[in-house]
Image (cartoon, rainbow, N blue to C red; front, side, top):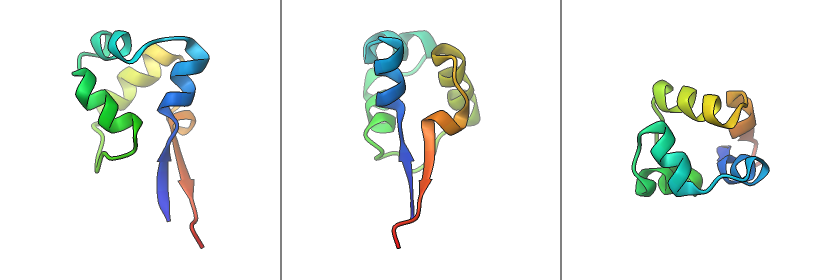
Length: 69
């Protein structure tokens, strides 16, 4: 079981670069990359809310539960 991060999909749909999104939500491009690649162990609700606000989406659009069985 895992949580898949679909941040790159939403960024492509909204045609926004990582650098621009990171600046808009107030995190470093490196931290956004960690989220985007799924290497993050956690995400703050404030960061998730900022992502959803900027990308005009719901948390479920960014995070997906995948059953590996």
